[in-house]
Length: 603
Image (spheres, rainbow, N blue to C red):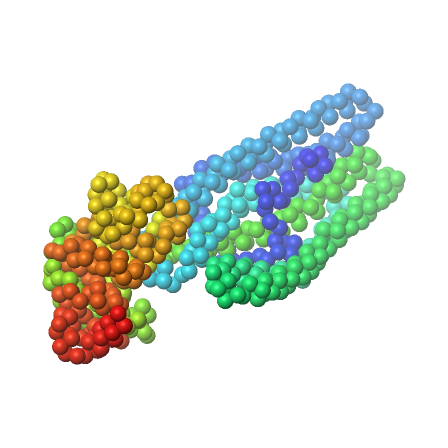
């Protein structure tokens, strides 16, 4: 391979794509600024980069020297000893080229992966510090793409494109200087061919990029249709829409096929045309050098041989650098997306004088609280309520009235826009965040389980818990019976993050997790929304035990589950419409009473 290509490495090593030949190139907004930031971000991780620079210069040596040495061999063809020594030199040159490129790949893998490890770790560590509002503004799939695909693009560029770019750069400079040394006139003629290749590449890629852009859009539409069809397959089958989705898939697949054929055919013009130009240039240089040799302008036939070999090698690196540069642009664009996340403001840090919260009593008070996820859309308006320690409080209301928002404010997933929330007489923002959140045992409406064992899911916040404590928490939540029926009981690994369980079973596991936390304040956000009525009654009685002697805040649509609460708060349009005990609210015969009667008359 080295002899055939003159030592120039192929540009598609390790799967590097070639967007420069028609593919879609994602261009960065500010390449210089992003590269400077990337350089600063990787400070301390670039040890050995100087060796890469030196090895890249040496890696171009075979491409630069082998044609010259070959020409000398042709000149000395009648001198057997000289030819033997020259052939030995060529052999040593190519062996040295192999060793240099091996060392180059070794060092680049070592440096590149260390740099990427640092970038990925920095990004992940920053993501975990971001407030919940950030995740509400970004789709999870998008964040996953930035953490994986964008970082992988940077990795590919650092590990492959960078070394190739350096090697090709040294090769072009070295070959150009050697060509000038051998024949300035032939060198000027060769530059005409390089100019033609540049014009051809620019023209073809500008035209074909439109097709590849349509191809990407069509592929995205097809992927979206496939994802929707598979994820909603049960609905598709229930409504007998199999033939319809097959037809839609066929249309999108046909469209993608047609566009892809056009894009690939158009981009396929480039390499054959470039080969034609290269061959015509080679013929022109051959004829011209022959004329010069016959006329005595060139006295050494070996010089002609060397120059023709240089011509073969000179144009190719320009095209490959264009391809690598496009990869480089895509990687820098990915780095910009990474920096967009790193520029996000993390959760506000604890104050220097932040208070420790070791044994909270559980007195909660909301004073004139206003909040909106966006300033123009207020969710909560002038909320004021006291929940004394040990009180079981329930928050009810229509969907969108602000019930779950209050939970997010209590746990400081968000901070109030105006007013304050007090715990044991002090503003929540006065406490250390870690201490504050440990004071709450939370069961959110959306269950969150991990691909670990049932035991580890229950003791997620308390990994030191014993199996007896875990089992007791599960029994209290009513989850023990179905856990024992699992293949390995408490050691059963939830391979798909709990998706193999029913919604109700997942909910019971999250309740068991909150029970095990044994926090002084318990928050249940629609904890019984996904269980049957029998299980609901079991959980209700369990909640009475769990909530005893501790403050609890319960959100529920089923009013029958919160009738025993000490305080019921009815929200309407972000404001408190009614509050009191179940009996008091029923006596008033207001909105709460109407809601309760409406629900119970169907039971």
